[in-house]
Every structure is written in structure tokens, then in C-alpha cells.
Length: 276
Image (cartoon, one colour):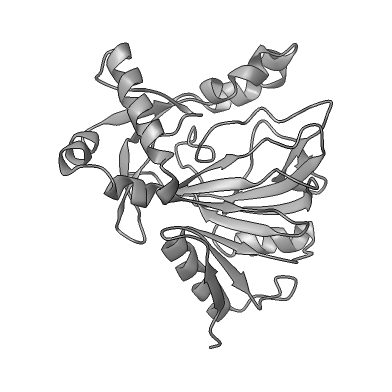
């Protein structure tokens, strides 16, 4: 089995993997190596991968069954591939740190994102290790947070879209299909066995068993804590760059500093397990 050419991007999260052509069939041995890298580095990156939607679908399918997203347009013929596009007429609304689709009972295991159109400057993405963020808490805070459960809500994460003219009608079925769900504030990664922070600013509405002011204050503390630079890495997109991240143990944040330039990425998510 050939060794991967791995270049870590920071002290605790992220690595670029070179010398792989993802347009070619991926062997089981290579898949095992990629999955091990995903668990270890939490987000892995590839350059110059001019894959087709069918190849992106096949790559993601190796990691497990695929999910679809209820709110985004999709690539023709591939309903699991969401289009994430920002233009001068319709700029992106996602600004904050988040994990993908934690409003689901089974949030994604991982996400495969391909850059199709990128601005000449700006438009990078930050990823943060929720494993490192957990380790950065005091033992007393770790123990306290591990007793708590939080509510994650699709309608909370898409409140701006719902407030647009016609938004309630466009997302009516998504609201029915995605009622609020409960997840532990601290979950255990099912492969690494490590503890990770599992609340995020986009979809976590409140922590159960606390007053509104207590919940808001505690979540504000956690959200500030996870933004610590030492827990993160930054990726500069180029056309045909690919990121695969472990959605169970990371959060990410797009840097929206490129308006009014055009940016288009195509995303596919892999079905995950029930957090515990």
C-alpha cells in the first residue's frame, strides 16, 4: 500500500493530501487510508481534482449512504449534491461557525465539498476542531457540559430565508420534515472515542433545563471559546479544490469577504449516526 503525501495545515486540524487523482477509481485500501486521515486530521483537502458530479457522488458514497438538503438547489441528475452559490444579486446568508445539518436526528457523518467557481481574492473557509476545543475546557466545565442536552432547529438556522417573501411557502415541507431535535452538548466520536463539543451558533436554539438567560450566556461562552485561533485552520480555495470534513468533530465558517464576486461550490453530505 502506497503512503499518502500528507501536509498538515495547523497544529491540531487539517491536512492537504497530494499525489492522488480522485477522477480515477478509488481502491478499498486507499479509501481506508482516507478515512483514517479524516478521523485523525478532521478535515482533508485536495487540489486540482476536476471530478464530475458522478465522481463526487461515488467518492462520497464510499463513506456511507448519502443525505439530501431540504433548502438548496441541486445539481441536475444528482439530488444529493447541493449548490452553494453566492452572486451579487443573491449573496450568501451563512456567516457563522456551524456544523452541517445538526437539525437532523442523524446529522451528517462527513461532507464532500468541491469548488467550481472561486473569486480572485477572498472566500476562504475556516475549520475548527471541536475535539481540541473540548480539550481546552477546564475539567469542571467538561463535566458540567457533559450532563446537558441542547435543541437544534431547522427553522432557527434558516430564519432569514423563512423571513423572505415566499420563504414560508418555499420551505413549508422542509419545516414539516425537520422538527426540532435534541442532541448532547458533548458527544463521543464513534470512531476516535474522543469527546467533542456539539452545539453550534447556526442551529442550536437553546440548552434544556436552563433558563433562557442561562442558556444564552452558556452558549455565548461556548461559541466564543470555539473561535480560539489555535483550534482552527484556514483553506484558500482554488477551482477544483476539494474538502472532506468530519462533521461529527468540526465546525466551519465561510469568510464572506468577496462580494460582489461570484462563488459556487457543490456539496454532498454522508448520513451519520445518532449522537450520544
